Image 1 (cartoon, one colour):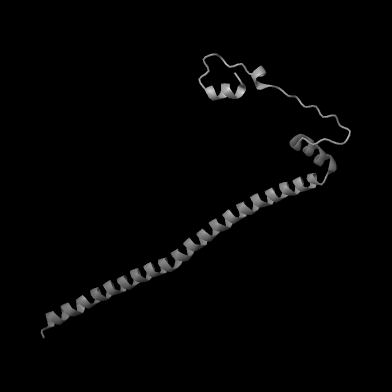
Image 2: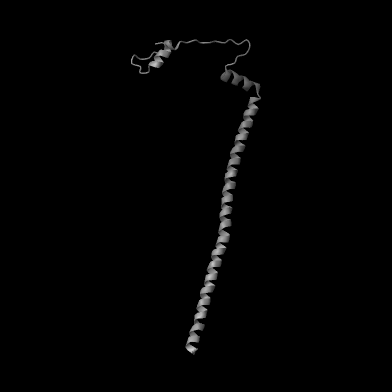
Length: 125
């Protein structure tokens, strides 16, 4: 071989080596980025899950406290009697019970051109 050809080959080798070294660096950087990026995404996802679970826990604790207050009120005989009288229409022995019997036809007067005949029939009009 002649000297200029050998000189060109030697000059070409550092360029190929530089390209190979650069390629190895780029591949290593991409690999390192992938190794660091995926755990970071997992970490942020877990943090979101923890925040959501904390919010749910706080809401459930508040609801539990409210229910505990209702249980404490339900054990109070005065509250039980009030609820029985208001919601269940219960009376005690000795109370006077008044019933109002009102005929709806006496109270509700439908206009002559009332479009719903079934209502008029129910009211006895």
